[in-house]
Length: 445
Image (cartoon, rainbow, N blue to C red):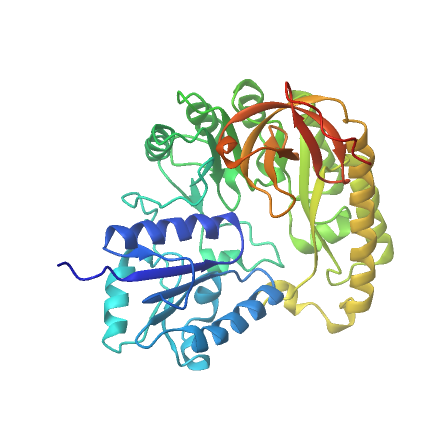
């Protein structure tokens, strides 16, 4: 009788790049003889894949690492991976004696052997950058059956003054286009028809021969790719070639997540974003001129050092002028090692002021979104059913322009494309009815 296979539990924090890295790690370990489990208590290996973008995210993970001490079974190996592991390195081994492994984003190739060393009592930090590492020979174990996250680029060269990513992910490097196509074809063969291209500044992709426009056209032309998305781009890298490729590639969805960060040119300059308010607006105009009915979402930071009330007012007017469908909004979080921590203390924005600005920003975003969404009630849209909703016995689906629609139905519909009528909205999320089914009771808006 064969001995039972060892088990691994991976918990993921942060961006979709971290989700993709977890899929890579899990695929590698399953190939090496492990089984995945849903809870840490019974796992032989516990990995916490971390984010370092904001202090709150790190503190949350530090607390979770502490919790694992009481949940890990005797003899289990606990490791910390990802951006926080890269940033803090051996400090994590000093702070948490039950942690045996600290592995940065370029160290996953050696994960099985490092785990075996940990079983023998060796505590290891693996945080060297490898500018050639793209994990081309890994087979990801994908979590979502309806879309595939495909990394096309790792690292970042922009060095915005608030951002820790160049420190935790290293300099920018792109995969060969042929390798991205190989992975795309494998994904489609598995039955997945929505592809999301991932990169820290994904539209600056360049493999030495092909740019992002080439990549979009090539991936979008793979038979079976029905929806093509990408995240996150930089406003400076939407060249005419790229915009034209987005407009002319049928599978490209009518949605762009376009980080703005601030609507004030003065603040953008201090952030080293390398564009002005006017430049951002020109990018918006070019995208909307090329792609009718384009939906835009964004990232915005409030309370950046030196941000005045006038600067913040410019952010609010920019939000109103663009008409974002959604925004990920944050208070500035200083990160050790970034230039923003060296601004004079006198320029710091108090937490009270930053919190008040954040509340106003959220209200502005939500108010505009609700107003626009109400006008869409009664329209019909194609949706891809993604998963069961957390409550209400509904299914969560998404339109091509990234609107979330809750519909009735059972899990057999997950992965299917359906036509739905938008029958109501909570403001940010829609309620829909599959065309041809009996309508539900009227929904208040």
